Image 1 (cartoon, rainbow, N blue to C red):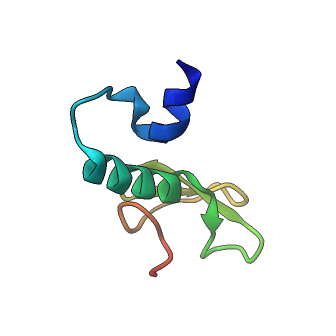
Image 2: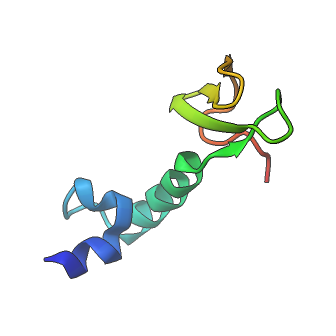
Length: 74
């Protein structure tokens, strides 16, 4: 059963029955939002997503609002 989780990645927690397009879109957004991103408050600081639109700088400890999924615009 471990081979199935490699294929579905983060979407594996929902189980079957949603379709490939939904799984791919969800996995793309989930992988971006879980990464630590560059902080606007400190040049070497990293930011972690706490909730949708709420971010925390790990270096300074500041909590601020931003975009829902990722701070850097593509």
